[in-house]
Image (cartoon, rainbow, N blue to C red; front, side, top):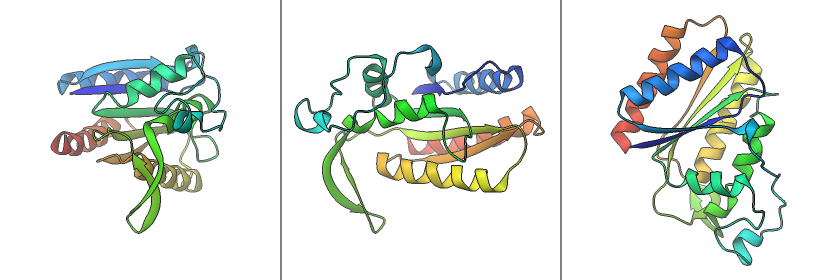
Length: 191
């Protein structure tokens, strides 16, 4: 199985870096072939919202930068890990840019899923998503918004398994990894 680890951290943080390393080690221990991408080191322009990726160049963004490559990788993996500081309940700006550039991977047509209107899938294979958000301290409001955002994005992307997990600096590394491992088992069952 293949996993894509998208690191949306905005700066170096030794505490968070240890969690990131633990996630990568656990994925490898479970037999995943892991590709790790530090997004802040890439050249990714924001989505232009022109829908050319649907109409003029179906399945490919017209902006030729690293965002195009990451969007391709997102459909070539069984699991995508979103690793991000929680910013106002959302993703970091670096991860948000990459997720916006995912739009070529869905179609401009609509269907009903779970009683709601969503885009049809361009590809039959879809990746599971584990979104790891981190905060300095617990914040119920930000955590609730983050969990809802992960659910909404995963529903539109068609993720077979989609789970948020939140790490705060007061949480033990072992407790976090145990929770991550439990979520990973759900992915392995669905894949």
